[in-house]
Image 1 (tube, rainbow, N blue to C red):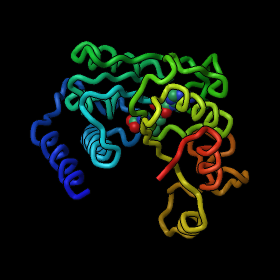
Image 2 (image 1 turned 90 degrees about the vertical axis):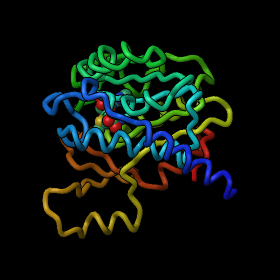
Image 3 (image 1 turned 60 degrees about the vertical axis):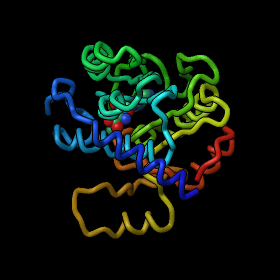
Image 4 (image 1 turned 120 degrees about the vertical axis):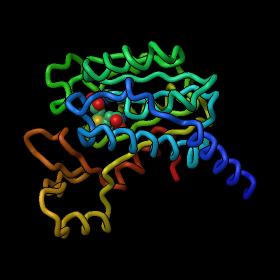
Length: 242
Ligand SMILES: C[S@@+](CC[C@H](N)C(=O)[O-])C[C@H]1O[C@@H](n2cnc3c(N)ncnc32)[C@H](O)[C@@H]1O
């Protein structure tokens, strides 16, 4: 147990020691459409996630990885220096994000591949053709060791989330791992959000039972899910959590 932990700390240390951003891969502020439009923040967040994947999900450099909603490569860029003999597939619904990743990242790292999915999302792709609730991921069953979604289900409605979870179950290898972020609503976080003193922050005051919306007119701007809904959905699609 202790030895395993030490190995993970060493793996993170080794990766950080050799890691160096290639600034040509980092998009300029005006092209960044996820998180803050700021290159320093873009770089910092990308690295933090890779570190979490190694430390908490035991990601290995030889694994097969899927990123759902890869945006403009915030995580793919630092990951490319970790994934030596493994491979990466990423898809997203915003054309200029995918174009950037294809032109900048995939041309330098042949084990990285990016695809555009023309899926409707009122906030990100309002003219999209297909519905996320019916979309079949373009990959074979049991293809991936590790799948991650950072800040994706925070912008998707329940039927869409459920379909994506069933697709994740389909394309994840048996015993594979998945890292997913949510705005998680429970008694504690609900109180904190409702009574926060800071202004102009997310408050999710539109209560729809299973989920809470920041903005009724464009739900996909930000969606918080009841913890119970997330746990039950995981169970429904045979995904265990910790
Ligand atoms: C806040 S950004 C996060 C992007 C990336 N995961 C990151 O951490 O930099 C939200 C992303 O979700 C993507 N997205 C929204 N709906 C999606 C869907 N149905 N399928 C795949 N990606 C989706 C958007 O295009 C956008 O790139």
